[in-house]
Image 1: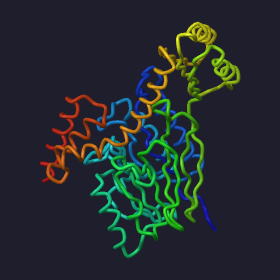
Image 2: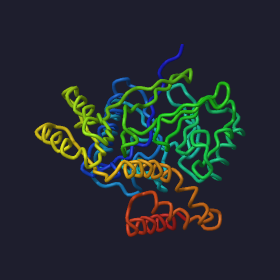
Image 3: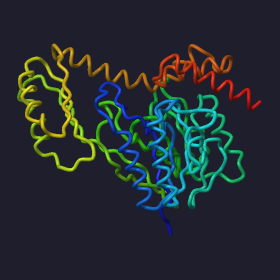
Image 4: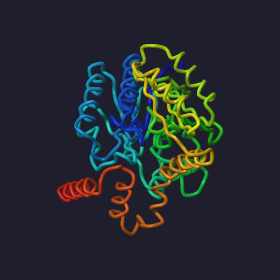
Length: 367
């Protein structure tokens, strides 16, 4: 008889101001994560966090206080929490371990049994390292049933330079692969009897990630299903004529009340629509609704901006592999790690330098 085993989620990116362009849109990451914890408590199931729990290697006191509060809730309800690290928050000592005793780090490849399922997890790593770790699973006397990673899989991206692990290297008798890093819900059958999933992010960071959000429930027979978590209602409208804004007005009129997060209406429009946009903004000025608008000079400029947004999303996925072309990680691992943190954390150069200095001192102390 199959029973629910655990729920998992990755790419949480705890930060109040998570949107890459509009810093006035706040609270998405906190609301999505709290909803996920609510679900774990409601179902009374173990929780697995698949990396990028934090948006940076140096999370703020506000973020850590919020995270501790959620972990305190899990401890109070006797909910086990397991976690691996992603590329955004990876540290020699994971932040979640440093700030709370209720979180178990499972990103070192040590087999762990989670409520009826044999699992193994790996923190984010460069391609050569993670593929070596994955290949070594074939040498275990007892194969795990579930592999957990925070990597960009070749099978999900295909294009060279944008992926950093090939799932065909995973032993064929590991039935389930759970991943984070790519901010899109995704599923593929790698081989007969072997399935891989990306949880998708817990909240949007940009307009290309709008839509319902979910976590994954894993059962003891290794079947899985998606369960919804809280997300912000968002509508994107690209308007080149005033009458194209009718869809936005209809959406606003049909919005249900009692939203946890204020709905967001995102308008990209040409000058011909400006008067109608101003009227629309005025009509909701006294309501709990966010309206963001951008004016572009022409249809051609609109398409250019849309193309640019798509290229920006692709570039974010390819940073680690592009960096490999500049700095050989086997020759200078410290420099490689430093530049990756600088490019991928969103922190200032000074913050990254301070972090690496602290890590260096800690490593010397351990030796």
